[in-house]
Length: 235
Length: 235
DNA sequence: TTTCTTATTAACATATTGTTAATATCAAAA
DNA sequence: TTTTGATATTAACAATATGTTAATAAGAAA
Image (cartoon, rainbow over all chains, first blue to last red; front, side, top):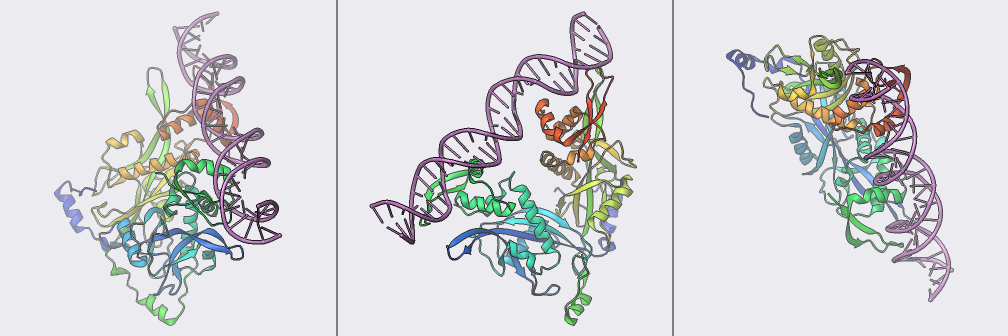
């Protein structure tokens, strides 16, 4: 934004005299719901791997909610935009840089933080877990989060995030931010199924998704069944 | 949210000693992009009315941006949620109560307000202009807003709002919040066209929209052509 | 009665999706 | 070596949905 120019002396005076401390103190934070995918072994007997949706959490080591899990995030500081703040806190809390992020929702309940009035601007972030280097944070299976005691209203924020993801998956290319460079259509379908919470029929899924995919020429192997073609996302 | 219970004496002390003024002062505002529809006379010779999309603006009577148009909104006060704050400011700046609203985006650029650091949580609101009683605010034609000098980044906020509206119109029932109780399909189509910025073919539009409509049995008249059926929104 | 205008439906083509069945290709068991 | 069991992939058809043009309807005004 270009710098604001006061129109007259009177306005200059008004702005110089303006007292920013007239309001009771309020803090703004950013918090990120970071999604990724990992293959989980769901059937050890048949050695069956399945894609599962993960959320990156950090353990709090200060009051309040000490030892609870929370979303990575932190206070918005002077001179920082919300996005600046997101970048800085993601780096410091999880080691991550260059994460695809978009704004989710701003949470403004009065008592959501026992320290003081805190309004949190929440983001959804998506990344390829194979590439990302994580520090001091853990990938938690999305299905397990309901069982955890989460800090603040972060459990609620995660719920809203998955709803948003579910809403956007069919009319945007948002999922590809968390797919690895190369993947099979079945793997992609599993990710869709996990996010949507329902099974899809393969032929229809293949047809609609294939405009967005590019054949790598490579195949998977050693799987005890017909190998599958590896694709990449076509921009 | 249920009240937070400290787990131990140590945490109680921590919370009592916590100094909310440690951060440099920051303010949070809410601003609403309020959409409505009015019939504008576009061809006086043929007495032709057309639906146009309007945004409700207020004229600022204080510094900064004195005498510029701005979105109705204001500071979030102690003990108010964002929605509380939105309700209060809409009432006081425009006289409106019970307006359908949903969160749009939170704007956090550092210099967006020359008074102090202000982060604004913007909302989209939609209402039926025939029912709404407005005070101290004016309906501005959406197409004219580009020409106006708007306060703060409010021009930008309106642009984002119309983009969101355009994105949601085809997979939600959001438009009906700004339609009058009874309307013709042509009127509805015009609203769609104005929001999408493109002409639609009537037969296809009729077909897809009619599941959402209920016949009132009434007709329009005196128009110099075949009268049209009046519908209402079917929930 | 004709003309102009917009509303509404019909009819058809085309595109998209849902669904079931057939076929392909691997590893491991028989 | 053949069979079995698994998943991958394509084919084929049905069912819907959408795009498009043309026909018909119903009013006011010429």
